[in-house]
Image 1 (cartoon, rainbow, N blue to C red):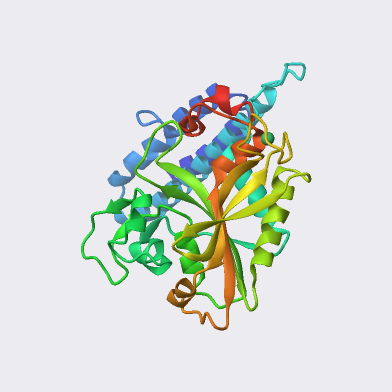
Image 2 (cartoon, rainbow, N blue to C red):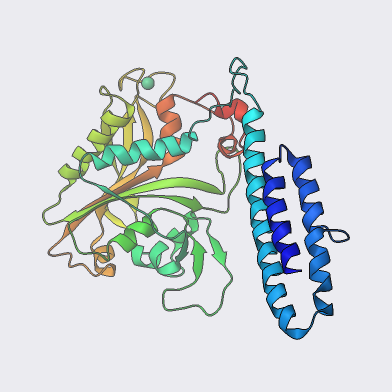
Length: 342
Ligand SMILES: [Zn+2]
C-alpha cells in the first residue's frame, strides 16, 4: 500500500504537468480526489482495514499526499484563471464612458467663498451644535424666558425631559447661538460660524432649514470703526470692488448699539433705481456685543469689547448673483434643471 501511494504521487506529478484548461483540472481532481472513485479517496477508505501500526504509517503518508494534491490543484486553478484574464483582449479603440461631471451645491459654494474671504483677514471658521440649549440661543443673548423678543424666532423645541440648567433643548434658530458659545473662549476672538438654522416657517421666501453665518471679533479696544472696516472689506470682496457697505441704527437684544447692514446697489451705485430701495440692498444685522452678553460668556466688559454681524447665506448669494427666484425652497429640491445653472 505504501508503494501504491508513492506510485500515485509520481503519477499525479506527471498528470499535473499536462493540464491545459479548467476542464482538465476538474478531471484531474476527480481522478485523484473524486468522492466515489478517486484513486487517493480509495486508499483513504481502505485505511480502516489495516492493523493499528500500519494504519498510522500509511494514514500519515496518504494524508500528506492529499494535502499536496489539494495545494497543487488550487495553485493550478489560480494560474489558469490568470491566463483566462489575459486572453480577454481589450479593444483600445472603444470610446470611453462619459460620466456626468457634478459640481458643489451653490450654498456650499457660497459658504466656501464667505469662509475664504474672512480667513484672509485672520478669522477662523467654527462650528457649533445645531441641537442647542435655550441658554445659548436666547438667555445668554439677553433674552430671558418670556421675553417678547423671542417671538421673532419661530423656534422648534425638543420635547425632552429633564430640562437642565441650560434650559430646554431646541433646534438652533440662528447662528448667534454659536457666537454665544464662542464667547466662552479667551480673547482675542475672530470667528466665523456658518451653520444650518431651523425655524417653524415655510413659504416662498422661507425654508424651515437655511444657513446663516455669524462673525465675531472680541479684543481690547474694539470700536464701531473696526466693524465698519470689516463690513466694507467683505462687501467689496464678495459683491465687487465698486460696492460699499452702510450701517443704519437698529435694535437687537444682543448688541448695543445695533445696526442693519446695507450694500450699495450694483446697478445704480446708491443713486436709486427700479432694482433697489433708494440705492441700497438690505444684507443683515450687526452691532457691538452687548456688555451682558460678554458677561454671560464669562468675559469682563470693562476689559474687552467686540462686534458681531451676521446674515443669511442663501440671501447673500442670491443678491450677489442678481437672482430673484420665485420660491427659495427650490434651493433644496435637488432639481438638476435649476442646480446645473450654477
Ligand atoms: Zn439701484
